Image (cartoon, rainbow, N blue to C red; front, top):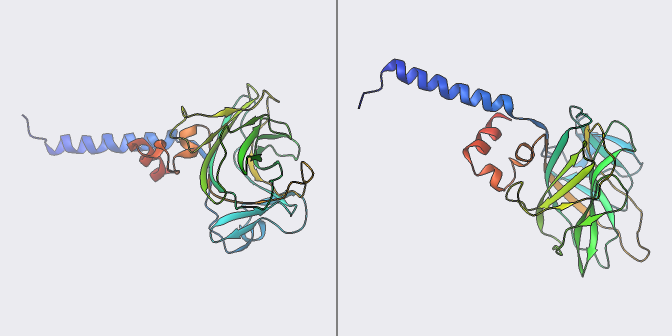
Length: 253
């Protein structure tokens, strides 16, 4: 076996650098958010990263490094990223914890994609009653869920949730604690196509549906948006970051 010469070693090092550079170039994470702001209102404390696009009153709060929303309030906040095209597919991954409530939770959505306006919302994520607890619901572009996660979930437990919106097909998907993109998912009914997605939004709403149900709170953290499932979910405890490629992507994000 030939010994590696200094030239060979140099070339190997150059090759590794090229691979890492190429990995960096192909990464397409559009936005990450860990809510590393001082406790208080999200918009006021985020240094301009988040803005309110609807509602007035008590804002979504930053509490110990996560976003805490309360459905008894009204402001809806968003953080923008590079606008995606009319045929693009956009993914988001985040953690969410729904604290326990007394009664049946009101069906309401708390997170979604949007364009530059205040009407075109995509891949809305709902809390929906399920037995004595809740589950997550999804709609592509309507204000009511058209698909629900098939099993009841636990109050006070943190879940990794992934969503996507396919602007060409007018569809959306939702995963709960996925290992990768092939994990079980639900798909919203076909909705509006062509939204130019450019922001991720979190919502508060005092709407109670149906009558007799109760409003609830949510805690969201570790948000990422990307043009592929892996780019959005690389920082989450899923199969996407157990590989060398996942770790390289995290290093170069």
